[in-house]
Length: 205
Image (cartoon, rainbow, N blue to C red; front, side, top):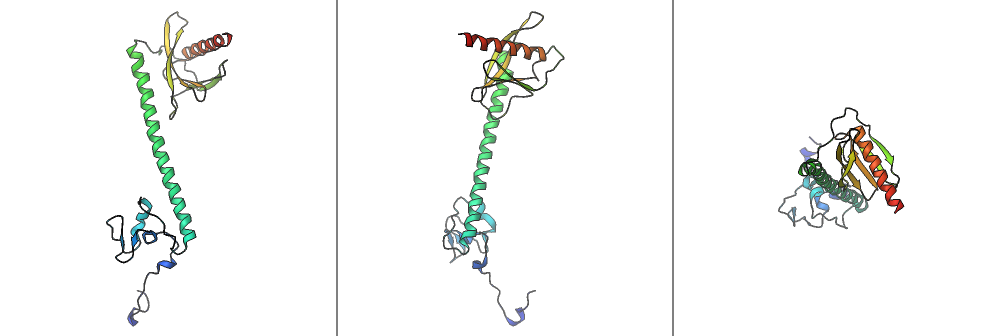
């Protein structure tokens, strides 16, 4: 209990002393009935920090300690922007992942092309430069968040059988991706040789 109640003292909240933002600092706050003019909310104290998630909040220029509160408001707007960008990136990554998985699983089956799984030797993730300047990347899985164009590269294995191997091209970064989860060391090496041969042919033309 605070001292002074026995002498009928009254303790009031002085909003001019506050240096942190609350709903009372908004231009839509109605001090006459302590409510919000944009939403049907009764805000008797400070809005319980609801201004952070309010799309109508605008800082009143006449509030006390405006400079400090303005800085808080700028930081909050930056936080919202980062959150929106992260959400949009996650949606894009999810869409690209679904597209790549569909092309890997459905496209070879439609054309009746078997996937090479008959070798035990698995190549490690690596990057090698092709003669045309593009980067040949052996990865575990195709990278997320990139727009890859998939295509099938025909190869002839050491036993004389023909196969078609799927790769993903990143035209913007001039990279070619192939996964070592689906294809073996021999198949990946053959694809590298074929792509090198194609690049040489292009240069001669």
